Structure formats: C-alpha cells, structure tokens
Amino acid sequence: MTQNPGSPTPRVVLLDIEGTTLPVAFVHKVLFPYARAHLPALLVQQHDNPVVVQALAETAQLAPGVPAAEQLERWMDTDAKVAPLKSLQGLCWEQGYRQGELVADLYADVVPTLQAWKAAGLTLAVYSSGSEAAQKLIYGYTEQGDVTPLFSAFFDLKVGGKRESASYRAIVQQAGWVAADVLFLSDVVAELEAAEQAGLQVCQIARPEDGTVCGVRHRVAASLPQAARLFGLPEGA
Ligand SMILES: CSCCC(=O)C(=O)COP(=O)(O)O
Ligand SMILES: [Mg+2]
Image (cartoon, rainbow, N blue to C red; front, side, top):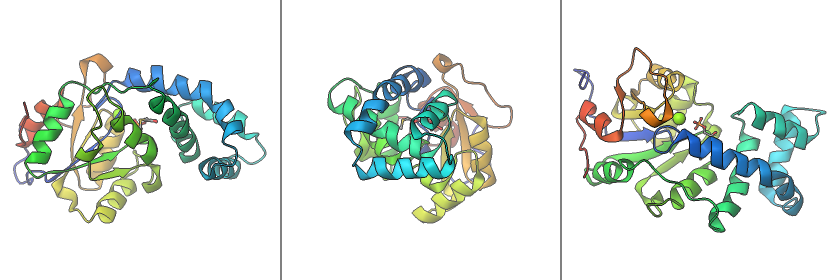
C-alpha cells in the first residue's frame, strides 16, 4: 500500500524511540536495569537536586502514604509511564552516558534516513515517555555520534500519555503544525490509534528484531526507508 490518496506528503515526522529508532532490548535490558541499580544512591547523593525534589513531591502526590522508594520500585516493576519516574530515570542515565557506561545503538537505517528527510526540508521531532532530558541524552550519546541536531522538538509526558489522542492534539498545537502534515512513526498500535484520532498520518514500524505485534489497520514498515517509500519521502543513503 502506498500513500493514501488525498493525504498530503508529510512535512513533519514525529518519532517514537523504543522499537522505532532503536531496539526495545536496549531500553528494557540496558537502560531500565541501569536506572534500577543506580536510583537508590542517586536519591541520597542528589537529594537537593531540584529535579529530585520535584519528582519525589509528584510521587507523594500520586501515591500518598507510600514511601517514595517503594512506589518507584512498583512503577519500575510495571513499566509505568509516569513523569516522576521518568525524570529520575533520566538523571540516572545522565551519569551513565557521561561516564561512558551507556551508549545507544540506533538501527542502521535511522541516521541516513533522518538526514535525508531533514535535507529535504522535513521537520523531525521526538515523542517518547522518556523525559525530554532522557531523549536528548539517548540521541546525544549514540554509536553514530550526537544526532540531537536532527530534531527540532522533543515531547514527553508533559503533553500527556502516548495512548491518548489529546496528547497528539497538544503536540500539534504547541508546535504550530497542521495535524494532517504530520507522520507519526511508532511500533505500538495503541499509540498509532491515538495519533490517528487526532488527525495525524501514521505508520507502524515493525522491526523483525523487536518481534513487534503488527496491527491490521495501519500501514506497516520494517524500517524507516520502507516507511519513506510508503509516504513519498526520500529514502536516504
Ligand atoms: C528516552 S529513552 C527511554 C524511554 C523510556 O523511558 C520509555 O519508557 C519508553 O517508553 P515509550 O512509551 O516511549 O515506548
Ligand atoms: Mg515504541
């Protein structure tokens, strides 16, 4: 299936991270365990860091009466997408990236395709449950170098959850985009459905390495160049 007749060629590409630009395993087998191992010490060492103070206050608000450390553990156990946990994980990862213990390995097609899209005048942006700071770190410390300059905007849970259509409306409004000009790429069907409800064009990225569960309603590509072909965008090197 190629571009929907009547849909404009996308001018903006909004990208998920996990399962779209890098392997799910990097997040679940490297980043999450790293944060779990380092969080207790971070809470002590950086107790007066305003990011920590705010995250702990938000945790107490969301789970009154539960000790913060216990609540954070529960959230990590269930992969809860909640802002205070995401802020604190971002702080843990910051240490890891800066000390050279963490390096993100993007799928090989990602940088050449994003470079081609940017060179063609498209706007590129990120939407992840990971905090904005964590997004800048993951793209700042990759095997392919610092690729943050490719992106014009970084959206996180401040706009809402990725499975809610209101979040995509908020992104479009904040950025001053036209919803139909935006192509959202994600591996998760529920996220595509929410974005589609908000009027965005969508494409599922189903990486064979990630064992992505394919939906039946959306166009599916196994890589960014394949998505480019489906939507009339340049494919890159
Ligand atoms: C910024 S990389 C870490 C991503 C993360 O923390 C996460 O929970 C991924 O969730 P998503 O909903 O963006 O797939
Ligand atoms: Mg994903």
